[in-house]
Length: 193
Image (tube, rainbow, N blue to C red; front, side, top):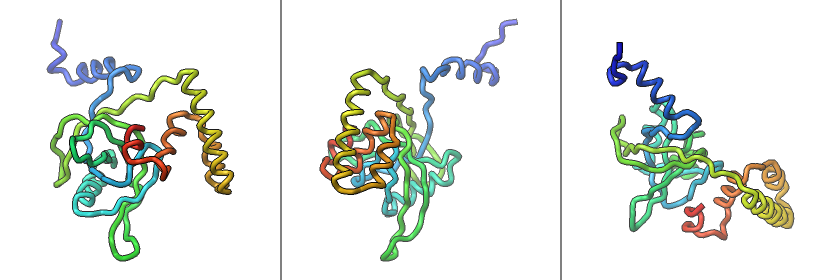
């Protein structure tokens, strides 16, 4: 007869899947976090990160985890950040001069929840992946205008490989995230993206 769901793992899993159907409810994930002042990392960006002690601990924890990802969040002077970017580790190695660095690829934006426990000495946090914003006609129009501007600038600089890369972008979010490479934007403006 009526068995409660709380003690039945299979029913609990079915209930979790039902609640999360269609991505309506994000499931929290535990990941190690790395706070950085520079660079600002956005989805799609591939950047090197110098490995000081804190960065080494976070990268090692991510590599040892099942997902292989870590959260990269801006180090703010006045508050704890609310958002960061889930990133995968592409490569870890030595840089000229003998220091160590990791190359990371930003993948998805995430909301930072509470601290949690995890293996190793890294700080771990609960994160919820943020859904992509709904595309409106205005968003598509602004993205097309921005793409034309970026392409014109790159063509004037004869940066043909970048022209090809930007031409291949069709997703407005991915196009906007390329602004993370812009040297004329401040870190505050990049974080707002």
